[in-house]
Image (tube, rainbow, N blue to C red; front, side):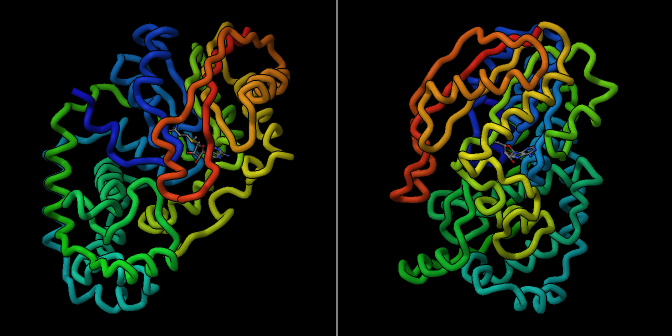
Length: 364
Ligand SMILES: C[S@@+](CC[C@H](N)C(=O)[O-])C[C@H]1O[C@@H](n2cnc3c(N)ncnc32)[C@H](O)[C@@H]1O
């Protein structure tokens, strides 16, 4: 059975666990350390733990940090249930009505009044950066915050995609045009149900190191724990394919952000949106790996991008690898077509990204 934590919260441009599993099995043995400096929803670190490896994950996006940390530092379900009951007992619906009314119109279309009061309360109370218990509860809410409510009662919102948060004005127009109403959900009952569902597969015994950071800070943050770091399985941002801040604005709001899409608030580094600067971004990745990895380390990179040929991806990775200031050898590369086309599904007419390239390098 697939581990139920894998799909705890969807993430745009995520890779499947089979990708991480295959490379971790091929390149490491139990006890080895696996790093993903752009960990997104945390598939590499979580899969590494499941396979008895040690794991380090980093990402600049608070959504990625929260979800990865929840999966790889999971508290016992009994503790989660106790915390849910505590929250439920402390909830006073009346106290949240004025806050609910002050939110932009999007929220009133997206959530029923009683659900939104609960969401506001839970958002205010969860100390997800300080506590593993609250981090898991926050990640479970993130996974249920929006989605196809006509298909599943596990979503709190009116009809929305589950992978990305659609923009407020577009969403309101869509709901009005189709006469769609927000469902009435009880967040505490939903959280109990989600705990039951996700913990049907037991969490791994060991825990990962998860860092909320710009990858360029990795050498400083990992200064004491890089010994023996011989395997990286990662997927940096694809060229001009998605803006992680805009596409996850609603989840970022739940984690304490403003109630609207924002740009360059989390990271000013927008080089992955621009063909002129993209390879400088990737060169920085190599610079970081060059001073972080042990001798003879393996680096597996899955990469795609709008208007990039597979050849230019492989060449771009090889050319920029000189910035590692180490001998870097390409061992293999493999091109695959993207099935499912997430971009097209949620942005009709979008060019999206049609294929990805998997490259395996050895860093001497
Ligand atoms: C292609 S996604 C990785 C998806 C991941 N493999 C998964 O399965 O969910 C690229 C990730 O890089 C992160 N990112 C973008 N700029 C970053 C930076 N400067 N430092 C660290 N992470 C960054 C994004 O937040 C995003 O999560």
